[in-house]
Image (cartoon, rainbow, N blue to C red; front, side, top):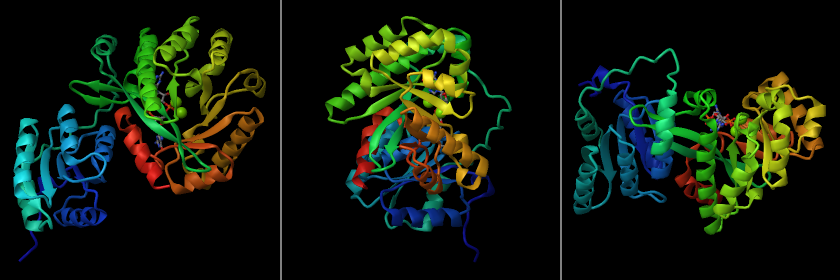
Length: 405
Ligand code: C2E
Ligand code: MG
Ligand code: MG
């Protein structure tokens, strides 16, 4: 008798496996592999799973989820899934008693989620197979579109009104003691048909069609709201917000940002404004006044993507910047790339000489972390710490990270 496996059409299925128990994750993953499924993402609780879904190019088609987990449990997680119009099949795996499971099943159905079945732990391969088959034959993967599909200016305008702009945050961690210093706000677009969109589909359009000021302010508003709420919970954090050069041409920007921060009860010293090096240097004459006044108001100022523009030492010395973010091109894999490593070291020296805090951006591996620590960077931001996550999940993530220190 040959081992049962899934039909060919199932084999590219995207699976998300959520359980707080590593042992269960390992066992179920190896069963799935035996059944012919290899496209598997694992998460240890609801918060991590949502973070994973939000950055996947295509959402998972199958979710196998535990109920009892520390942090965000299965029930809270299902509500978030429903809010994201999750369309994949859901399999519950649980050791809980049958009555509780029945309640959860009806909850899933009430949320309009596609409930496929419950598997009692320890899970058996045959029942796993049968439950997955209830999904029906999955649709073949969509053809990758050659061109990046940008939002239309009308969509941006209407979507800003409708609140489709969301703020994700990516943690920034102190290299010396691994404490969470704060996070960078990264804009995302919750498109009603296309799902969650990355900034490269809307930032440049917003800039081109004169909508970037509104977008900057919308992100800034949300950032101040979160920062104020976190401070009230006793978290001593800073938030960074990206400011487009186009917005720096507005002479009243310092008053506007200062006003919004003040209303939210946030001191400007807790806010860092990031500007990309390349555009900063080419528009310096017009923006210098605004930049200087932002600094006078107490905002931190950061040079983003450092190393990709052409800053002269003379100009750098002139600018009142407090932070330098070294571009990922000189961080990720730099240990094995002599030229990248050289630029990394030079950037650290330059920043230090000017009294700036040095952030290594885009560190993905332990090797990247070790290198940037060795050359004297102050903070790390990158996948080695965490991927960008919805801002509401940040404090739960921070608590978990710091409990492991
Ligand atoms: P950025 O400001 O340099 O942000 C860092 C980007 O690097 C983010 O991409 C982040 O997800 C990505 N990243 C972080 N760590 C890693 C890593 O370890 N590996 C890799 N491969 N990537 C990593 P994202 O979110 O797609 O943002 C792209 C750019 O869009 C940002 O670059 C920023 O220039 C712009 N942007 C994002 N939000 C806003 C905004 O609110 N306003 C403006 N004006 N620009 C924004
Ligand atoms: Mg940035
Ligand atoms: Mg950057």
